[in-house]
Amino acid sequence: MLELDLAKKRDSFMLEVKMNIAGNACILGRNGSGKSTLLSLIAGLLSPDRGIIRFNGRDITRISVEERKVVLVTPATYLPNLDVDKHLLWAINKGKIDKKLIDNIKSRLGVNYSGIVDRLSTGMRIRTAIATALLSDVELILVDEAFSFVDDKDALIEKTVQICKELKKQILFATQDESDSRHVEEVYLLRDGKAEKIK
Amino acid sequence: MRINWLGILSYSMLVVLILPVLLLLYWGLGPFYDSIGISLQMQKAIILSLISSAIAVFFIALLFTPLSYYLSRNKNDVAETLVDLPAMVPHPIIGIALLVFDSPLTPTGKFLLGIGINFFNSLDGMVIALIIVSAPLYIKSLLSYFDSMDRAPEYFARGLGAGVGKIFMQIVLPRSLRGILTASLISLSRAMSEFGSIAIVAYSILNFFALSGSSAASVLIYQYYTSFGLKAAVTASAAMIIVAIPIMIATRILSRR
Image (cartoon, rainbow over all chains, first blue to last red; front, side, top):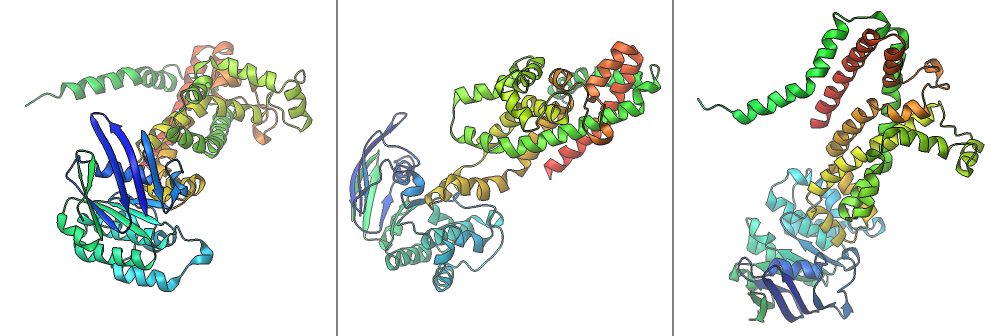
């Protein structure tokens, strides 16, 4: 459960939202509607001017990025110097490696390639980053437009949401494509810095 | 055909910049040639300059890479100004400061001498002086490199729960080798050209194997100038430049790869 009641001013743009997101959700909005700002605030990469971010009952507004258990995935968020297998294992404690789970997620998300991540295509990097986030002990995964860079976008969203349910993680992704919203329980429309629940 | 005035102007300025050095090479190896300038003493001085500068740059890279990264990610004007301080003061002051720091008359000096660390006329003193005067350039150069790096991988790694140490060692450092090499090259150039501080703290080195009794090249060139006149100093300077330029070019090529 993600509870947001926050405001952030950036130049002439004002983001002001009040949202209670219980399940997996997506945020629809055009360029400049505030999607990236909102996700950056939840991830801790920006600080709100005022308000509160509560996740599963815990106030995470002032908690450091590394302690939030929230990760933001964008087309640029990957660990460029690692090979795919090391990337997937990077956030897992050595004693907690579950080979079966790793193989399962790799196969379902189509991570069937190897090599240094920096040299892979954007779509492959995004798959790798999402798989890494799913395998980590992060509890909330935020995806900022990254799905749209993947060729089988629908399948990837569907499988990612399904795996999140199985692993008891929550996902919140931003998109401009309304059809992406059919894979999640809740949909919000962000317009001029205000959020409206439409599903 | 369109004339590239900016290119012509730029390369003209480059010529202005290096003309005195080119002329020095011409005079030192030609009309003003003096064999004292390439004597065994001078050869040892060049070797000492290269070795002490290389050791200094090794320690600079080891000790100041984390500081450069930290200052890049946590902007602090006071700390950045303090980093510049050794480069801003006249360098003999650094030499005098080190002498006071390691003087038998001061508590710090008593302590250091008590554990066998002597800066005066020693390789230790020369290397420490070179570290202090060359580190600011290294830090500033690497700080700019870290500033220009894409931070998305670091944000991702932090979101995955990694601490700053793990991110620095496993994500940032492997992507920074070119920046570290370039910054090292800049501080190596600075160290090899240093005169003011080492002329005070380590005029000649008394404790370094076959190089015992040698001075750094910059100091010896000054000695030649005052003792033997212009010709010996010009030839010695040309010899130093001939050794330094290929090293600089080789390091730069290496850092591009």
